[in-house]
Length: 167
Image: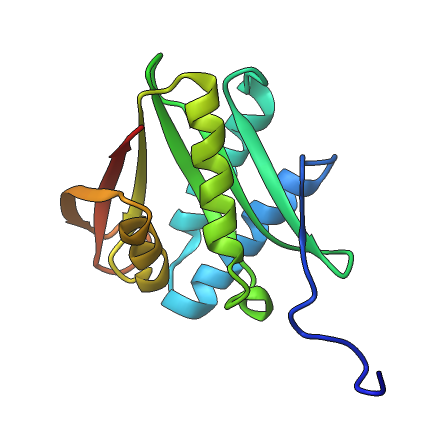
């Protein structure tokens, strides 16, 4: 009672509001620049993905979840249509202060449940080998790595990976 609050305070998942997509893509770009040394090439990519979602998203087949804790945005994930039968996870991110709460798992599980309910047969995603926690989560949830290639699009050599799961 006197401790001032629980650091494991629950979070809520909600649909995006005006400004949320821009905020989450900006935060992800800033975090990855700080944590992995990625340059503006990554920022351009996430900004493009966010803009595409805003301009083209089909609410019946695509969705974004914003995670909020203590009134602050602490994470997000997007499901977009890759093809009629394949969904793609995009832009999973969790703020450093919210890591360890199971938020990343919850976001991916929500996205997979939506993809199943929507009738997709498979979900794919594109990630990088340095994102160890995310890759572990994907593996634990049943995704398998199907491809990998080295690139330098973000200012340094990284291994990009494609992962997928059948629904």
